[in-house]
Length: 515
Image (cartoon, rainbow, N blue to C red; front, side):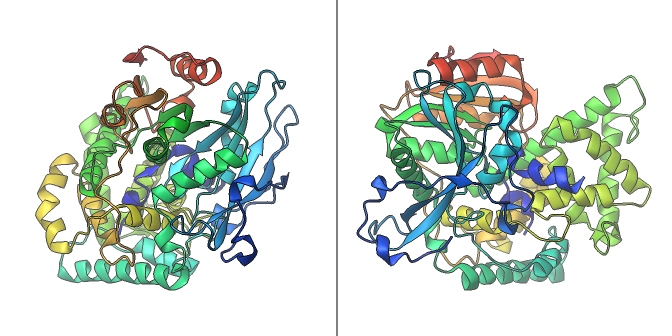
């Protein structure tokens, strides 16, 4: 099962934490009768991230000496039994730079995935949110099943190395059988190692965690910044608790009306569009494009490379080889941001010369693999949350039937995305619904930001989210740019609109366009 679907809505910020380095428990019986809304958090200096969070050093103080603090919040394991066993959800914050009169409250971030660790993502990119910190404490968290919050564990590092090396676009019956068996082995390992948490990682569970977090942090309303999958989480929260929505922004918007098949097909189109834009950009520069003489030549050469890798992998990062699957996921990772296009160009040049190490490093970033060979739990968490949320289950016959439609959407990514639909076929927990319900009549305005060049959450999803939230709730803002998300592009127009709403409550006119 290819990783791209697993990470179908991963935020750039969550995966870029790892790229920069490559190039606790259940069953607290004493808490059963405790009113968890009244718990007091014990904020302490943050430890270094563990392997499940991606590893690395403890977060450094911000330039103004702002210290990062971490705490564990108790939440019900099963929201259907709120006074039963609890789990610990890991939180991180840095306090506002403003005085008490200027402070609005806490601004809670979810950076996407699903499966991205907020504990690592927020410190890594907090410089971009300094303006917001003038009136908010900046807060993020590891959602249930993620990082240190009772993480979903499936296969070990060695097994994952083999899993990500498999052929994710089978060409014959033997390869199809191998893909199905490998996917089932992965899913069985998840059930064996994480049986207790798997039924309780749905987005509705995380949304209820958000409302508990709001109360424990002392806010009357939830002020929220959701990116990528974080927009789906925010939409589900707004549906469940419309009267508790404060100032909220959705950036890199998941289409809440699509089922998994429609989402995969949309992503095939989105990544193809991003590849088209990369190729056009390369050949439009004044200097010669090193990976093709025309935009079509760039794409044709990539297609020939991938076909060749299907037969004969290249040396990657020793002792692993760059397979067709690894190269495809590495290309996809680079398309998440225009800032990564230079790495894609360099990686393609290198691969054409017989060296697959850069594309392999990009693939490792997508898959959550660190330089020391340890994997974060972003992939297990992503699969667990998606499969718990998504009701449809697909088989090989259905995928084969849909291949022509996916190939028409993208020669390069079509097969890859189509076969990804097998990921939940043998999952232990039934999926909740065809798609999330985000209707939120009566909620405060939610600023919904769509990027016309977004590969992972195509632009059309922003309009679908606005319509699904309901009249008077979603306010659409368009950014005509490249990459996954808009705010982190540092576009002044986007930043001005978002900051104006979050800081001063000024809702921009619906239909605002930033270029």
